[in-house]
Every structure is written in structure tokens, then in C-alpha cells.
Length: 358
Image (tube, rainbow, N blue to C red; front, side):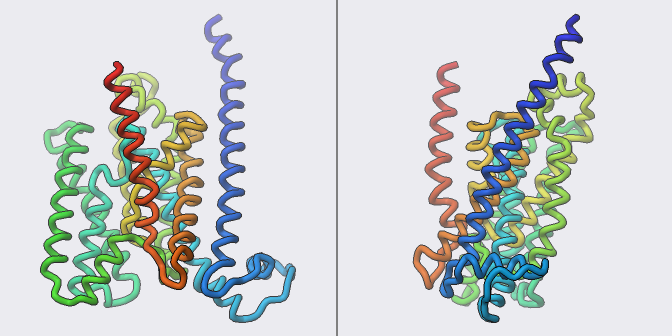
């Protein structure tokens, strides 16, 4: 009888999840398309939206409006790759943040919790300071990606050094490694005599999407989509891991395999995002948390929506950074920090009140 009740209850529950996913995905996709069109049409050269749409659909054989060659070049070679990279970075940070919050069962966790972002930043700073970033145009993101992945392996190796994985040890190792990488970055900055190089370091650390090309898309896109796809595919296992290791094992989750795999995937896409955009903070913290408040904590809904929400947030922040003091630009990381820092304090106070009331 109990099994019959579960069977009858499951379809409505699954249908409700599907409804939330479709509704949230529809709203966020519409918002993302609107922001992309706005970003493609605004800048030092304003381009009518009808021209932008015509340029985008022209390869399909449709011709909706006349446009000139300059507008086509600006959309296809300058603005579009920048926006695509921004959307990919937002997707990566949003998904990684949701995964980290589920794995650590902590709504204040983010992609930088285990030091991956700091490792990538340190490697990038060293590449700029030594001139290695000038070897070829993808040298800087490749250095940053290598530093991020190397840091992830280092932190995880520390966490399993005793022979048994410990989440607490992983987090503490991440904090220690982040502090070390921060000190290394500071040392490089202090020791840098060239003002031009120093300015390049500071600009990269502030996070930005300027001068991004289709090569950056081809470098980051496949890794982010594959890593994010792995996390989406194991969203149900993430739900069970949130209940605790013992409960997850009793429900058939191979914790010793699934957890390291999800941590690796989240670290990989975080490292890729840092490699192509620099340090863009708070995306992985506030986007999943805001969506969780609206659509609930089920990761089968939350993680795909966090991908869309992260893309919306970063592309919108980039649009603000490009236009708020035009023709000059702010850094995207500055915009996300201005938005994210007050929200983080709100979450911290809210969490502290909840803990004190228990």
C-alpha cells in the first residue's frame, strides 16, 4: 500500500519540478536574449536592434533589414564573442556555485571555496609579470587554467592525505591555499617595477571581457559545457548528498566516486571561467541562492536555472561596465562586487540569525 501511495504521488511531484524548470527557464532565457540584443546594439557605435537581428539570422538565408559592413564587423567580431564568453563564464560560475553549495551543504559556499580561483589568478599574475603572457594571445588563459586545475588537485590531495576524505579538511585546505596564493599575488605586485605590467595585472584581477575573441569561445566553451553537463546529469545524486553521506549511500549513491567527480567538474569549469575572464566575484554565490529562494532547493531545477541565471548576471554586468561611463569601461568584476557584496552581507546576517534562533 505504501508503495502504491509513493507511485501515485511521484508523477505530480515530477510534473511540478518540470513546471518550475520550464517556467524559470522560459523567463531567464527570454531575459538573456533581451540583454544580449541590448548589448549587441549599444556601445560607441549604436546599431539598431533590427540590424542586429538581421546580422544574426543572415546565415540562415533570411534578410530582415539592410545593414552596412561596419555594423556587421562590430557585431560578429567584437561584441558577439565577448557576449558569448560572458554567458559561458556566467553559466560556469552559476553551476559551480550551486554544486559547491550542495556538496558542502552550505548556502554561503561559492566556486572560490577550495581556492581554485586564487590558483588561477596567481598563475595568470605570474604569466603577466614574467612576460610569458605575450608569447601568444591564448598564453594567459592557458596559464590561468593550469594554475586553477593544479590548485584543485593540490587541495584535494591534502583533503585525502589521511587516507579518508574530509569535507572540513577540504575547506580548510582551500582557505589556506587561497591565503598563500593571495600572498604570492601581493608579492608579485609589490616586486613589479613596470607600471604598464602592473596595470595589466590589476586590470586582469578586476575581471573583464574586453578583447575576447572567438578563440576564447572555442577554448572555454567545450570544457564548460562538458563540465556543466556532468553536474546537471548528477543533480539527483547532489540532492541525496545534501541529506548526508550515510543517507546517500543507502539510496545507492557511490559517494567515493560521485563526490570527487562533481568537485572536479565544478573546479574545472571554475578554472576555465577564471582563465578567460579574470576574477569575477559573487556570481556563484548570489545567483544560485536567489534562484533557490524562488524555485526551491531541488538541484534538478536549480542547477540548469543557475546556468541561465549566471549568464544573465554576467552579460548584464558587462553591459553596465561597457556603458555606464562610456566611452571608458569599468571592469566586470567591479560591477558584480558592487552588487554581490551587499547581498553576501544580507545572506550572512540572515544565516547568523537563523543559527542563533536554533
